[in-house]
Length: 337
Image 1 (cartoon, rainbow, N blue to C red):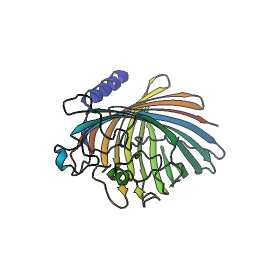
Image 2 (image 1 turned 120 degrees about the horizontal axis):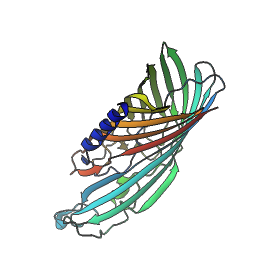
Image 3 (image 1 turned 120 degrees about the vertical axis):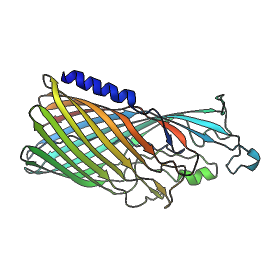
Image 4 (image 1 turned 180 degrees about the vertical axis):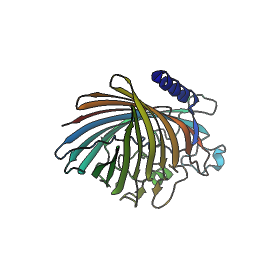
């Protein structure tokens, strides 16, 4: 009965999930959806090592050019055409946690990101089109590099039957950052929107509560990464927030299945203190998720599947494009030593 209910709920979410939404034309700096790191209570000297692999796919379609080439302010002036871009962002995040006392510990996270992009240009009728500046804005390319590491202190304590884990620390500006792409684009110069880091020291805080009630496993969690200032290129990333709940139960021996919901919010990015109208203006998403977790002694493996049930992307004053990102997958392996 439990398995049938989980399958029915997952199928309903997949059927009703939104396929496309209006989006800003410049949604080209994809951030991976935040993934929760499950809470554990580490004794003094215990070490937990985890590897979290996450990936998704995005399709962004937006217009460019001018309906009247003779009165066109774009560089270069060319007729109206469509950018149809696929983006495949992925991230491998390695995490090390160590218990220092009965309650306190330290944690380090190091992300390695890889992003593949492809582009197709068409006229408004769908016929192939070759723009005058085909490689300036988009390219067939694969980018890879380390993101900003996180260094966190962690505190874990039991309140009755509830395990509370709090984390607080900072992200370190070691990921690659790019020059202002909008300033370069105004002069028709080749540029890059994808940032591998924020280039700033950002506060990071997280809180996780976990409790078992009979066979049920209940969790509530929240996380925030706050951007306070701009980096050396004039870029200030949007602050990112996550809140979610999850309920699970064993469905076969020690295999635990869980349903959950996450609310994600990302603020607008700024360049030289300005919010660019065709840049990332902010987004809010509600994700429904199904997870499977299988312990193997001191090792555990978890698979998360998340789909959007609500998505709002701020579009600003420019004509909006369309964005589709129907599925997010995450796989985590953890071992406690």
